[in-house]
Length: 237
Image (tube, rainbow, N blue to C red; front, side):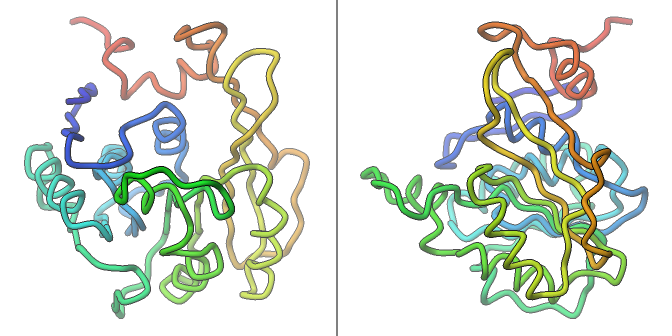
């Protein structure tokens, strides 16, 4: 069980556990008050619940793997917002809706040309075999509200490929956040935000977040980002 300030996440049925990168990604999501959100590959449901905590009106959480979808539903049911998140077990390519979303977010499979491990559910969660980047962006684009945003967490090495795929869909990059694990290191992951806006990435739209000063010691920057979520930053009253 991973406990946060306002809710807790059971994760024993999910291949991919809660990690700091995902927490940073969720905490920095561009959530607008009363917005509608689609969470693709919801896993435990943690990003969906973080979005509601930030003020989203409703989140639709789509998860491919049945045990993970069941656990996400359990986590939503046990949260303070059981009516504001709808969990759907489905392959996103088979999902069908007339709804349009203000934000579509995904922490998608990272690895598309890497040696796979033996756990089939973890393999599905970590690799792009069941959902390519092109499929992800294409699906997201069709459900995006006119002024909506697509928000994804990917390896920095696929950034240019995603920008190219997005361009073919009429999407452009308007925010990039690079994740540096430790002071002095180099970014390996980045959060990219796409929208139907002019394809001009201004210098101010490039952010770097350094997570740790040293082993398990958060920087001031990441502490401020996670202050409303992690128990270690909760203030006593």
